[in-house]
Length: 77
Image (cartoon, rainbow, N blue to C red; front, side, top):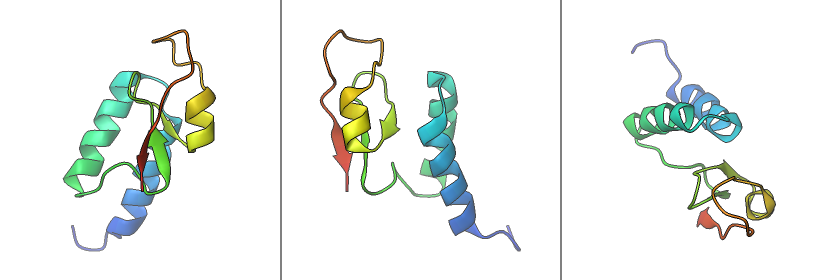
């Protein structure tokens, strides 16, 4: 992939991952990040129930639809 800045690609995918609303879209974006040898971006949290990624305080309080109580979060630091 000559001429492609992989850091820019990773950043764009990470931003898309945090904004994706559909679980299938998040799965595809996560697979692309794994191909770039990257995980959930540093400093963000992932909901263990629905996979939503974002700032820890926002993930903790989001309505994931998978449970009726606030989510515990998995930090990716």
